[in-house]
Length: 294
Ligand SMILES: NC(=O)C1=CN([C@@H]2O[C@H](COP(=O)(O)OP(=O)(O)OC[C@H]3O[C@@H](n4cnc5c(N)ncnc54)[C@H](OP(=O)(O)O)[C@@H]3O)[C@@H](O)[C@H]2O)C=CC1
Ligand SMILES: CC(C)(CO)C(=O)C(=O)O
Image (tube, protein in one colour):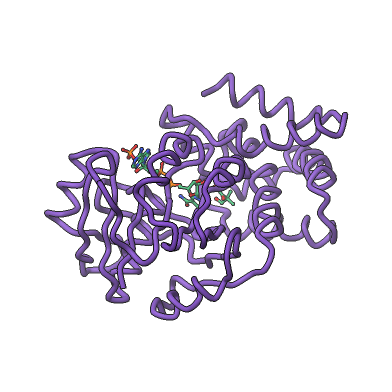
C-alpha cells in the first residue's frame, strides 16, 4: 500500500514513520526542497528508537499527481487554504484523504472538495520536531478518525495494515463530535499556557489559572452545544495531568515566533457565538491577546 503525506512537520513525520514501519510505501510532500533532500538522504528517525525508517520525499509544488491509496494532509490549518486548490488536481476523486488539523477552521475549506472519500482525524499524540528528519514521540495516544464524505470502511480496511502498538486508530461515526471534543480541550489549555508561558500541568496546580480555565470552558462548552459537561471538564483536567510536562503547541508557536492556530480554535468559537448573537468575553480576551503576541 502507498501513503502520501502532505507536510513534513511533527505530525506528518510521525505518520510517515509508523506507516513506513508497517511496510507501506511512504512519500512525504514537503514545502522546502532542503527537507525533501534530507529525508531522501537520511530517512526518518524517532529519537527513542535506533532504526531509521526509509521514506521518499518530494516538493509538493513540483508534484503532478499523488500516487497513493491514502493521502494524509498534515499541514497546519492556516496553510490549508494554499493547498486545497492543489488537491483538486493532484488527487483523484476515488483516492482517500485524511485531514488531521486541530480546531474547526479547516471544515469550510474541505467542503469545497468533491472527492468520494474524505475523513477527519483527531491526533491525540504529542510530538516534537527536532530537525527535518528527526522527531520525539513524547506523548503516546491515539488517532480518532470519522467519515466526512464516504464510508469509514474505505479507510478502516486500509488501516488494518498499520498495526503499531504506539500508533493505534479509533473509529468514530460523527466527525463533529471528535473535533468539538478536541477543540474544547485546545480552547481552554492552549491560549492560557501561551499567555502565562507555563507547561500544561501548571494550569491545574495554580488555583487562579484554574479559575480562568473554568471560565473559558463554560463559554466553549455552551457554544459547541456539548453534553456531559462534567465528563468534559474531567477530561480537560486529565489531559493537563497526563501531559503535565509538555508545552502546548500554541506556547511553542509563540516561543518560536510562528503563526498560531488561535483563529481555528478561539476565533471559530467567537464566530459561532456571533451567529447566535452571543458574546464570549473571556474567549475574546485570550483571542486578542494571542493575536497581539504573535
Ligand atoms: N505536534 C503535535 O503534537 C500535534 C499537532 N496537531 C495538529 O496537527 C496539525 C499539524 O501540526 P504539526 O505537525 O505540529 O505542525 P508543524 O508546523 O510541525 O508542521 C506543518 C508542516 O506543514 C508544512 N507545510 C506548510 N505549508 C506547506 C505546503 N504548502 N506544502 C507542503 N508542506 C507545507 C510545513 O513546512 P515547513 O517546515 O517548510 O514550514 C511543516 O513541515 C496541526 O493542525 C496541529 O494542531 C494535533 C495534535 C498534536
Ligand atoms: C492537548 C494539547 C494542549 C496537548 O499538548 C494540544 O493538543 C496542543 O498542544 O495543541
